[in-house]
Image (spheres, rainbow, N blue to C red):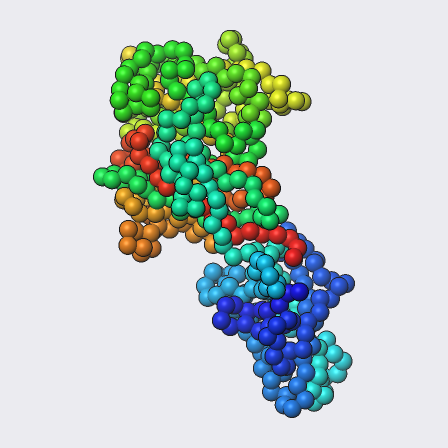
Length: 455
């Protein structure tokens, strides 16, 4: 049994269930028209029984209050100003569910004029309601874990590149949200709290991606320079695993292969034809204004190119460079588990004639079931927290004293928790000067407003 009310917290009218007061006598759904859906909205008809034989003023007041709710709902839906008006469903035990009302109006359901109905002291009123086509539960914190730091409900802590090895040079900096029972049956909005932990530094741009479709959600492929052919080893304590590679090339628009990583059949089977971005970390500062870069996929051990990203003009001074998206494997397979090995090749060119070199530390492959780029307006200092609230569509930050400010703007759609599967989220970031210190760390907490279609 549910108690239903319409309104907002602290100002609502109970339509059915515990706490119902005169003149409300109950509510029925009009079965012939309930659930007329159009995309993200649905139209419901609620018939409300009103009865007051002592005075007619309470009936009129109830009707006016419903019209007031609909006025507020239209204002909030159009502008985001004011308060959200909801249809609230509260069971005797279990989760509370709400659906935001976007529009509505009232109509007499009984025969006769308004005066006749009021004089009779008993009437029915139909509420025409346009609401979101889902029910949403209050926000709840999710259990998260990371191979870099399993802190669960206190947040998952990780460095930019934790030194955690899998097989064949595969590593991970993922935050994992496991599948949980009783969760949503629809994609549900997430809220992330990302706290920057490194003393004496400030966070600049942040990149975040989601994985639900690749075979092994808890693994991100970080292709270290030592696993690649090409270039010359350069020991550096500040690089990932203590070294990067010096890669030489000639200018004058000469296409040059920098590094070649062999991706085995198991890696390709894990990727399952999903879309990926590639994030490169330079081993040394790069200040060329006309350096163009591309990632190519070739048949293993050959020069046959079967896929490639668009050319990307590298940003001078930034230690992280983000490439456009590409599928891996870059073609349809009848049985992805039988995918063959491929080679991933970093190709560069520069228009300016001469001899040049770049230092390459690693190339990280991140899946693209979701993607957000948080661009810096103001640097995020130590112990400040970047907050991405998907339910409200707002990105803000909390300073060290808990005051809300704006430090970043976000490109890309807000993240939604995919139901009934494990979700993985991956992070990369630079400091305010464009650096990418591999030991800089963050702590991530995740929250969800679970959604379902039916109660």
